[in-house]
Amino acid sequence: MLVAVLTYMGYGILTVFGYLRDFLRHWKIERCHIAREREEQKDFVPLYQDFENFYTRNLYMRIRDSWNRPICSVPGAKMDLVERVSHDYNWTFEYTGRVVTDVINLGSYNYLGFAENTGPCAESAARVTMEYGVGVASTRQEMGNLDRHEEMEKLVARFLGVESAMAFGMGFATNSMNIPAITGKGCLILSDELNHASLVLGARLSGSVIRVFKHNNMQSLEKLLREAIVHGQPRTHRPWKKILIVVEGIYSMEGSIVRLPEVLALKQRYRAYLYLDEAHSIGALGPRGRGVVDYFGLDPRDVDVMMGTFTKSFGAAGGYIAGKRELIEYLRAHSHSAVYATSMSPPVVEQIITSMKCIMGEDGTTIGESRVRQLAENTVYFRRRLREMGFIIYGNNDSPVVPMMLYMPAKIGAFGREMLKRNIGVVVVGFPATPIIESRARFCISAAHTKAMLDTALSVIGKVGDLLQLKYSRGWKPSSPGRPCDDRGYEDVDD
Image (cartoon, rainbow, N blue to C red; front, side, top):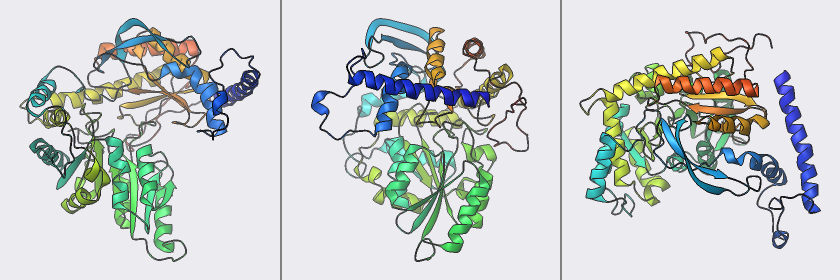
């Protein structure tokens, strides 16, 4: 309660001083005039709503140095950062010419460590670049369909255990352009309230009716399903043409894992369809790295539409849709992303093929298996140590996405800066990516992290946590072993 009250007080003080600074800018007393609208723009319609502008000017700009930091190396377990400074309160930056080296990287989605410039993946990508070039300059339906694309899609289908799969050059477009091809008017989409922006955009573009259920709450989902069956479409009360449940494997801001067995049970009971976004879970979950379906030991054929990206565990770019052959053939003809978008770059395709074969063990080694196991061990160890130190963290014990709560707005930038001073690169997140009072740091654990790196990072996090008073939890207990998808495994015993 104390933390919540102080957080609201922080935003209240920020708002008061923000309006005071706007007043001073208006009368040209405030030294930083960049935040004030230029005279020649005053007659134009503003690009942003008033509050959005206010938030950007008075909070985001104060801590903008915590984001968009340019790196000049491979985003592996360690990375190099280009140093920059600002002389106008983060409105513009200047580069000092200095490089901060050997920064421990706790922010990249490089879950299995395949984003590297050495090893079999890099060598295969370099060889294919010499053979095919760096780009195709055409769509798949015209002159851009390569034999490597065909091989990759067959491999993805085999990897997932489904009939067919197709690939797209951009992960965001995989969701936003394919959901409209699957559903339309007369259809109902039931979406988790914490679904990614690409899923939200795709649902809106589809023209379907959208209803939102509480995050990972099966009672809320079943209530909406029951109402949809009983009442049907608004006004006409005809049955819905299609009911599509849209969920994610791992939620990127919460670190929670979808309750897939329960979702599948509801989907089968009410004869709905399931769209599963495995952007963060594919490669990162399950004993074989096959994602959340593998994690729960379920049949992938029970999921109607399996979506995932190659941008994280595979160290590449793009996304895929997988499922029944009829679905994939339909999308090849009706998906805007398939028909109009340029096909994937050959080196990127080769990176996907090589890394996926490595995970499957088809490269003749056990590297992929050991990386999947190492990621799981690193994740459990890192989460346990953070809890023991007294931090409040969200998510499932097996999720490599680890949100650590900061709450107060002043601590967002302070935590990122203090960590970087100690050579640890972290991602801090605030509104609108999170609820306004639930600011957090989000760590992404990788198989490339050694125990020594994690211990170093944990030691620094502990010291900065003491400095900024971030150890809000004074007691914790592990999640019940009978419920592997519990969202939160902590308990504030005194509060």
